[in-house]
Image 1 (cartoon, helix red, strand yellow):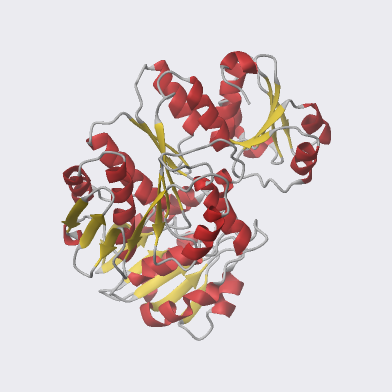
Image 2 (image 1 turned 90 degrees about the horizontal axis):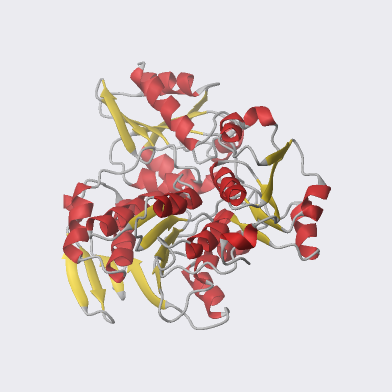
Length: 469
């Protein structure tokens, strides 16, 4: 669409959705001489911090999506939180107005910069485990001596990082990107050298028409890959065959495939219950890892470690560097984060557990009785899928938020359930229900937006409530 900043001069560009990525895109466009308007259906009062960060040359329209804005645009950049199914975007595409996502825009910008023009992208997507795997890959590649950027759904706007690298004249070998299905919906040329689809479980079905559409969005991470690229898949995932069907239907050659598995031997990495074994025939690489030496625990982190190591190894990271990184990595905030122990009760912050699959993975790792705090804004999740684990692992549940009644109905009879109006009250209730040796776990299985700014805000409020006990 454009090859240099000169191509952007005087172009009328509409950026739809103002948050981290929207602000980043709008500012770069304005600095490049484009005539930029940012549009968001939210009122200005809810976007104050982002508005303050905008280039003064950027025009703003808030509170609705006026059709005229979309008709006048030369092209449109859509932030991940904005569905492509809204009528103005559908009409724009019908009228041949180019519509791209922030990921595609960042990729185009990277190709124009000296620092990142020849850098390879390493892309991580999937329903659960993305942030931990992405951070592991970043730390492995950085420790191996590569110039490395981190960005995407992990909370760092990629365009900002790419421009900062150019400004500081840093040579970048790899851009490590955590990618949501939303970010992958509107790509055209984005092509990662190495990509991983960690797993697919039902999520965001309030946005998608069904699982097929959600799976297709995830598969987009590999749609432009070719024979010189790598793709890593979870051999144990129930939708792995669907992913392969989708990829085989794409135009052009397939990337080279590797797998990870906790159940069987594969070309890639597998876990035999004691050690993680790497056996990559095409690369002639064979060695083991001992997960008992990792700081991060749980079966989900064994999967994350396998996927991250495969990505890093395929892109030139030595095995001993990957092993050392896993021995030192202590995990991410809001993902099974130990907060404190009070009266023999552990408090664990898993605010990033925003869907049923994530909560299932978290609960699987507990041997002690759990008091589970859950609830928030429903994403059309099937909470009944939690029933067997709740019955087995959860001593009591404390529910909050809009989805509380739906969760209680789905899990009726599995454990004792109570309701609270606030997270602080839920923490106090959970503390009262817990006995020495129990764990209080915040793992909501829902989005946070009914009560909080985002999952990070929810996690911080949980930690504040725990600290106040």
